[in-house]
Image (cartoon, rainbow, N blue to C red; front, side, top):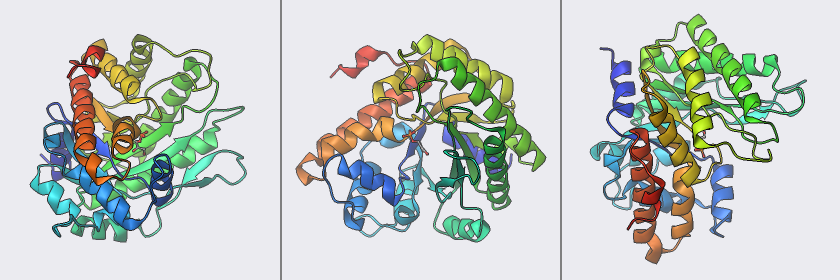
Length: 337
Ligand code: 13P
């Protein structure tokens, strides 16, 4: 078995999933603003240490995606975060894209930057302990959007990123996120997600990516946030699973969903239903940021006296997401002691 395959398998094995804690400076500032906390380097370090040191999370969390600043930071006792996580049996990973910019000539569509110099950055991240990486592409649904040009350029970049990662035995997580923003029905999201994933796997194949050494991080198929009504978990699961069955090659070890702005309860229940819907060839688990962290950050709000409570909230969310990844979650567990 290849080293890449080993890492990818370990990340999705058993009942575990991933925590995305790789918010860029501008994103973490937005999150901290919501609890009136200043986003400075020490507050960011304190928050990440709270997450990483939560007792018991290694039972539910196999890997944590870090941001450039975080992978260089240390615990209060001076242990580099990647080493601290590895000692706990949690695999450190790194976000390597540099965010999105407008796609020139395509108003309101985005393309992700970060390919220039990526090989050298990967070498450094690897020396700092990263075993896997993440690159997020964004596809927007709207009037005459997405264009095939936007999908094509983003999927090409994901494939080039994946090739550079695999050349250094870093497992690429490929994340083409079809955004929930908009007032479209679920069928529109299904159609766009299908086209995006189909294009993605065709590009990955063209650039000779080893499917057994990567993970897919897709959105669930959902109606737009401003659409009149929500879809039931059964409908979300049916659309999502059918697309994956059609487009994801058998060799891919696992699918790790993003939460995309769903509430923690929604993201957990939808993952549960996806796993209840059918036994798939791959593990279907989580790689959530907001659907795990939102209540944790609110419980903490930057106050030392809230740390223990915030860690309890994190452990609970990670445990419930883990149960959903093996089809054993029930909403009644939300209120259980
Ligand atoms: P959300 O779960 O908040 O969508 O974030 C996942 C992620 O890693 C986005 O790149």
